[in-house]
Image 1 (cartoon, rainbow, N blue to C red):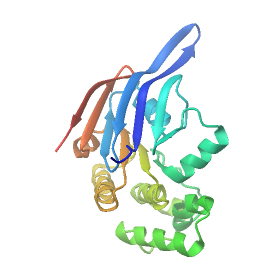
Image 2: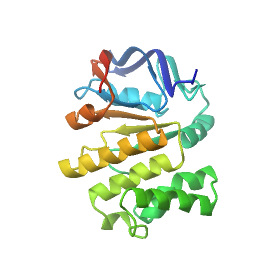
Image 3: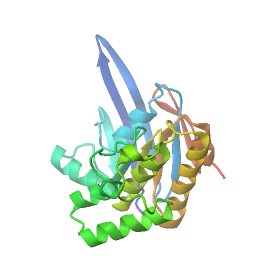
Length: 230
C-alpha cells in the first residue's frame, strides 16, 4: 500500500498572546493520499494556513505528529528539514515570491539549482513546462514585465519542476481575476492528472473549493467536515 503524501496525528499548534493561549490548530488527524487534489477551506482565522505551514515544515507543531512522504518532519533538525523541504515540498504563495532580478526561466529553475540538478536537465524540464502552460517565449523576461497570471504560472512551474512529493498552495488565486484564476486552476488540475502531483490548497475561494476533489472545511482550528467531491 502506497505511503500517504501527508499524515498528521493529533496535531496542535498553540500560540501565546499576552496571558492567553490561542489554539490555531486543534487535535487534527488526517491523511492526504498521493495524487490528491484537496482544498483546506474556511474563513480567516480558521487555521487553514497554519495547518498548511505545519505540513510544509514552515512551523512546528506544539504537539502531535506531522509526516510528509513517510518522514516525521515535526522533530527534524533545522538543516535536515530545510533540505527535506527542498526535495519534497513545492510552495505556491499568494504573492508569487519571484526573485525580481532573475528571468522567468531562472526563477522557475532556481529550486532545482539548489537541488544540484544539472543545467541541461533543469532547462529541459522548465522549457517543457513553459510550453505546456502557454509561456513559451517569455523565458527571458523579468517578473516586472509579466502579468500577475503569468507570474503565478511561473510560481506553479517552480513548485512542480523539482518533482516534489507534495505542492502546497496558499490562496494561489487571491490576487487574480476570475479568467486568470480559472486558467491557473486548469493548469494545476492538468498537472495533477497528467503528472500525479499532489496538491493541497488553503483557500476561501469558492472556485478552488468547487474544483478540488476533496474538501476539508475548518472552523476555529479544527476540521468541521471532510468530504470527497466529484
